[in-house]
Amino acid sequence: MNLPSIFQNTSKYLFIIVFILLHYFILNNLALLSKDMVYGGATAVDLNPSPLYGFMRVPANGLTLKHKTVDRLAADFGQIYFPSQHMPSLSSGYENPSQNQLDPWGRASRYAPLLHAICSISLCELKYGYASLLHVLGQLLLFYLTLFYVFKKLQIEKGFFPALLLVNICIFLAPAGLSWFERGQFSLYVAMSYLWLMLGLIRHNKFYIFLSALFAYIKWTSFPMMFLVSMVWLLNSKHLKELKSNVILIIVFPLTIISLFVFHLELGIVFIEGLFEQELTASPAGPSLMRIFPVLFVKALPFLLIIVGYVNIWRYENQFNNLIPYIIGSGIVLNIYPTLAYEYGVINLLCFIPLVMYWAKPLKRDGQFIGYAVEYLFYVFLLLASFSKNIREYYDSYSIIAYGYIIFATLITLIPVFFSSTVNRKINAPIHI
Image: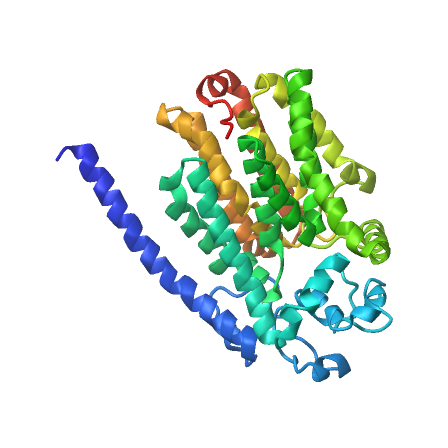
């Protein structure tokens, strides 16, 4: 047995040992959170580390006593669960503050009416603890299945288990990910919407675009990124014939969104008005870009990034696969684009793990340093962002987190540009199926 084979076998066995050991702690945190989510009882206080924002338990009032949900977790899931129990009064659930108190904290719902209607005949039939746990575990299962499928379709199967380990570390062993679980957030739906859109464009598959729209509709904070990628996809067209083909492919996304929206048109308009009001009047929360830039500049950011994208298109000679680092960089910046940009939103960006592996694969195969540099730079960003609590507490500032996002996004976008001739030679053209 030669030396490279020995090294490969040793690395393989070492990875298996690390994978198993870390999953002992991962599964322990999962069990603690799941038990607390269903029964209460504060078992989650034994989590190590603790969630980013501590624990936001359902308070005792008339609404929560009626539904027997006092002291439970998954506060953000409550924004769908409680209003969905009172569908005839849902319009008041979009007011801020809610006049009918359809939320235990008086928050306005930021989810489309169709989501409430679906929840009212599904998860709302369950007790709150079981419904919230099913909501979170269902997201996880769908995301794992999506990851597996994408790794297979992109022919990067060898990277699946390392990627799975990184995903589980970010979710179950980091403060940001644990807060995503504890709050019962919807971030993995955003991640899946990004991932299905990119796979649909790379493979020219309308059904993947349709799936992307379904997941994006669950959480509308995904829309700025979807708009940017769609516009860059069209600008990437080499000629008029390809532009027509690209329009036919990408139009599946807005048509799906419009079709879903018209199911509850009047309520949907009230919902959209609430979204706009929040973006324009709410004070920035978390590492939002609005902490460090003027409002008009921030709101124009998707259009500015499209201009940057057009420069990248020219530099990469209209090869869409070569734009992946730019798309990842844009995704990082747009993750802190909303006025309320909480740090657990880093979970949105886990979708880029297979994409950066796919982009780097031909470069790494030929020993090009640029492939390793961009891929591992993104992994470092994910880990730092997942542990942003420690950085924020040290500097006593959310702005330092926002600047960190900008720096990593800039590096991931620009480093490949300086090696664009190498990238253009090594990255394969899109595969059509």
